[in-house]
Image (cartoon, rainbow, N blue to C red; front, side):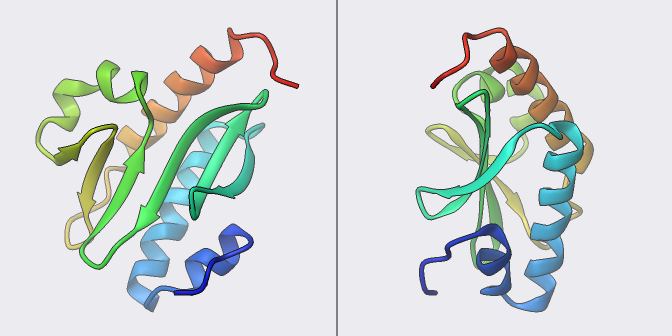
Length: 121
C-alpha cells in the first residue's frame, strides 16, 4: 500500500469489507471525540486533541490494531484482556463484530484525560 496522505486515502487502500470496518471505527472515534483532529501519524489514522495524541488505529489482513496508549489500555485492561495485545496495542479480529461501544468508551476516557492537560502548541 502506498503511504496515505489522509484517512480517506488510507481506508481506500483496503478491500471493501475491511474498509467498512475501518469506517465504523473512524465514525465511533469521531462521535466519541468530535473535537479531535484527524490526521495520519506513524502511517496510520491518528486523532489528536489539544495537540496531544488521543488514539490511533490501523488495518491489517486479519485484524484492526487499536492504540490508546498508555492509559487507555491500562484503564480498560480487563475488557481488553480477551483480545490479543502487544506493547501499547490491541488487536480486534476482523472476522468478529468490532467492539465499537468499547472503542467509544476508551476514546471518551482518553479525551477527558487529554483535555485535563495543558494545550500543546
